[in-house]
Amino acid sequence: MKEVNVNINGADASTYPIFIEEKLIETADEYLKKYCNASKYLIITNEKINSLWGEKLKVQNSEKFIIPDGETYKNFETLISILDKASELKMDRKSAFIAFGGGVIGDITGFAASIYRRGVDFVQIPTTLLAQVDSSVGGKTAVNNSYGKNLIGSFYQPKIVLADTNTLATLDERQIKTGFAEVVKYSFIEKSCGKNFNLFNFLYDNISEIKKLNLNYINEVVEICCKLKASVVNKDERENGLRAILNLGHTYGHALEKISNYEIFTHGEAVAAGLQVCFDLSLALGLISDDYYDKAAELINLFEFNLPEHPYYTPEKIAEAMKFDKKVQNGKVRFVLPTGTGEVNIFDNIDKDLLFKILK
Ligand code: NAD
Ligand code: GLY
Image (tube, rainbow, N blue to C red; front, side, top):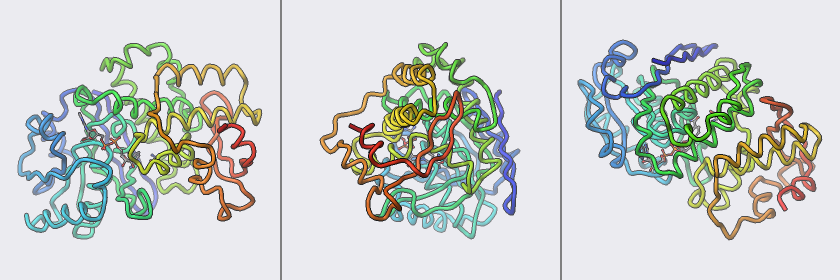
């Protein structure tokens, strides 16, 4: 059994474990009793996950609430439906919410838990690779509104995370790749996270087994990523500084998602494209050696993150979406950029002309 601990400091200090293994959902009750011990549970999931894995997740004293599938439904309407359901079921302050699904379910359930009766406990049971290596860890919760993604939310940590890697078997290829984009990202930031697991080489040396989702390797990959994220979140839960390094590839990635109205690219596909842009920028700025650039590009290529075709994918559109307009002081925008093997830094002064040159 792999276990990673998250230790949050400060006013809302908390400690919680992440367990990583196969068949964890079948034995979830054992863990819930030990780490949560709620009087009643509300499991929030969607029809797809419920039909694939719902029968295996057996939790005593629980009710299930099915929400619609998709990023479009990570909104106020769904949030209110969760809160209303909890009220209808007379869930009290000793009850807890369980997020059973990918990042969408995790983010909205965590936010609902943080405001229902001024906060009830919640548990993450992530079922996508992206959720297991990233979104279920670290306590960022959110919904979207008409102004953008994740604009309304809270920092609210779960009581426990149960990452059952068996559930990854039913993901489609695009969803697996979206998780791998975040995994590859971790391999480029690990020294800056304060660790050195040599994830880069682990991925490179075992690429074919990892791409096949061989759990002997995937369990280790998930464990390393959770350790890296925990290490960052332990030092900077509220993203006052260090936590921003987790956004390597995201400045460009978010812009790509935005111009396509979050409908064409998965988050990971956009981030994967963003990783390559960051390496191009770093090389142009002389921050990394040719050798590291080539090795990084090769690793990105090995995962075959093919971007779907999109007609609005032009440098001008991307730059505009990055807010390269009059709102940005002196035409400069913030990027996390590689500065050496496993190391990154935050740069607030990336020149517009250089970026345009790279994007073209
Ligand atoms: P998702 O939750 O939409 O899941 C992707 C698809 O896979 C959905 O259709 C879902 O129903 C399906 N699915 C889930 N588990 C499955 C399984 N085991 N088998 C088959 N299908 C399954 O997407 P995601 O990539 O998991 O998460 C993206 C969301 O996570 C975004 O909203 C993003 O903003 C958020 N996010 C949050 C954080 C954070 O720190 N809180 C970090 C990164 C991303
Ligand atoms: N996914 C970025 C973060 O958790 O901060």
